[in-house]
Image (cartoon, rainbow, N blue to C red; front, side, top):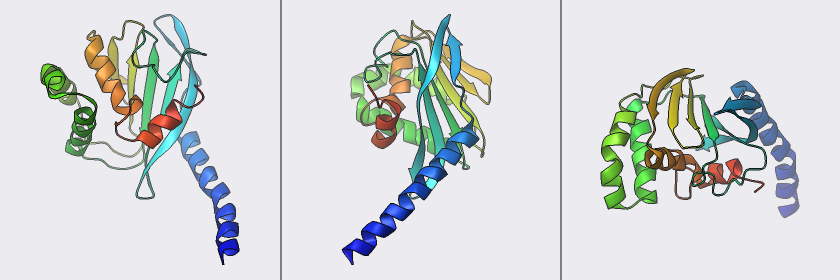
Length: 186
């Protein structure tokens, strides 16, 4: 019986990988991007699944060879792009962001950041399939948030920028599995 289960799993795994590859192809992430005069390259991309449902794909672009494990703490430019497959209410996006931020930061730091984060959240709308959000940090960690290609928020506050990108790229964020896949190979 165990042998049958193992054989079945070996047959299914390539299908799962192929489905993820098709989703990443659908997301059509850029291979390169210039930020602050520096060339960023696609380092990793992955699909976030929730209860076997594809929610979004994420891609991380950084300078080639930049260390990924500490990318939110260094002055290295980065671009994080999300491509959605499902409808998601604005309120659910904001709630998930706060849950991650509360796991990652102490109450005093969040109290200081709260008004800035709320201004950022004020720009959010309900997400529809094929919508795209991107967060871009320049070498000074100024943050640009884009929704379907249009800049909807910008700040020069490096602390806010690092905290917000950390929702995806730091431990105890939205998904540690996704984070590990995005910063793999470091």
